[in-house]
Amino acid sequence: MRMHRWPGAAGISDRLDVLLYEDQFRKVAGFLVADEDRPSRESRLSARGTVVFVRVPILELPGEVWHLTYAVTALHCLLRFNEDSALSKLRIRVNRRDKSLRYVDVPAPFAKWHKHETEDVAAIPVISRQPVDIESMGPSDLLQESERHRYRPGDEVFLSGLFSYHPGNKVIEPILRFGHLSLVPREPVSIRIKSEPEPLAKCEAFLVEAQTWEGQSGSPVFAYEDNGRPGPLSMKMIGIAHGYTTERLGAGATGPYVNAGITVVVPAYRVWELLTRGDVVDDQNRRAAEIRNGEPKRIVQASGVTDSEDGNPELGRFRG
Image 1 (cartoon, rainbow, N blue to C red):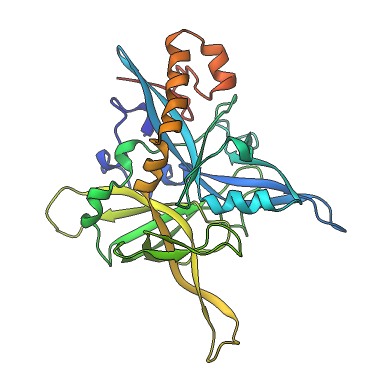
Image 2 (tube, helix red, strand yellow):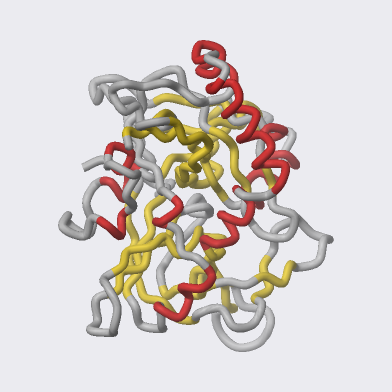
């Protein structure tokens, strides 16, 4: 089943007849990569993090709805890239529809990203001229702020993202990691978005008991509810991974830092906040006007919106 092919663009929560950990939850993730050129070393790929694909409806016409798909990641991944002069050619890596071929690298220049003013969130429209094998999250798949009360410590969660030890060779290989919700946002959590000496940011966040590592920043985090509480079953993307917490090993202030096993998660409603911000909506309206004016060829090349009869999932129209 493909999210983008369902009438009315139904979300994951409407399709719990499928297996919980079906491959679609790996296909919503792509990798953020760059070239790394260091002195005395040959140029190599540098994995910068994970992106999740989120689609936004931008135009409704008789019998169809046009969507624009964004790659969303943690803002700090982009800022680190921009600060490192040894890195170049930032791009998003996804699988081709044809499994016999290599992955596709979609250009994602730093200047083209929409960046949240206060949260660790950034997004860019996906522009691919080749059919790619991805899924996208619709608005109904993202946790809204009013739904926070549905999730409590102990609820099962999982995330999909980059495992730098095995990113894949001919295809990308997102892995699933599993854990439990540890804390629902009540007070701000201190996180680092910008590099030192900038102060830490105070942001709302979920805390999740799940082991993550570098490269999984930006990974979508899903919560599954099935514990007999009132209300329908739900599967929501509750947010994106910011990073993991650390603690000193041993007594005193001189021991090495180790992964504390707690992942900080930026709530999904902060992602939607960015995608509905005034300047981002203005860009969506401009792209919608291009569609309305009948400029599909230009749109494929310039805006990332493609008229795809076979349901090309990265962008396109949905039959209503």
